[in-house]
Image (cartoon, rainbow, N blue to C red; front, top):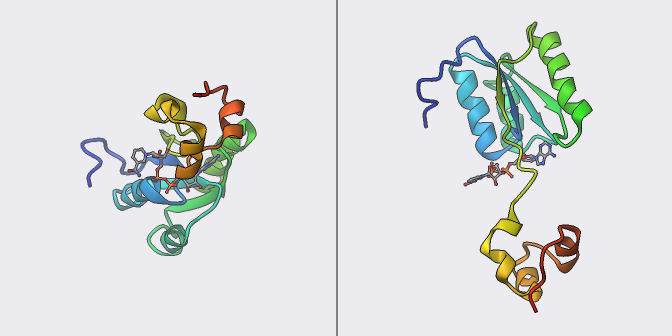
Length: 134
Ligand SMILES: NC(=O)c1ccc[n+]([C@@H]2O[C@H](COP(=O)([O-])OP(=O)(O)OC[C@H]3O[C@@H](n4cnc5c(N)ncnc54)[C@H](O)[C@@H]3O)[C@@H](O)[C@H]2O)c1
């Protein structure tokens, strides 16, 4: 995995959703390439904890952040200034807060079928104003 030609050395990067998965991998790569990283997530997974206590201990900071709350996003700038002395230059909006189920073929399925697959429920469909098949 590579970050291509984009130079991260010396930069400050905010990575939302970096408590796990793809975004954690990005945070790890960014630190390896010499960036300082703000790991912004609702929580850290076990892998995230390992990273923060290991290779990320000096160059990364975990900040609990719910990206759906503006004040918590704005707080990331403060954390960056306090911890790294400047605002971030790189922003990775990785937190998956919207799974576009309404754009997928799932919409064509019957409610019961969707429920069985555990993706969404009739209540969720109503909340999202999703059309209901009969
Ligand atoms: N894994 C894949 O193959 C793949 C492929 C394409 C797109 N994606 C998308 O990339 C994103 C990340 O995927 P992943 O597989 O690494 O998922 P993941 O579940 O491992 O990571 C998502 C992270 O986002 C965090 N998060 C959720 N809501 C949040 C919020 N409100 N504020 C802050 N953090 C929040 C979670 O705590 C979690 O740590 C998702 O949106 C996913 O749909 C993933």
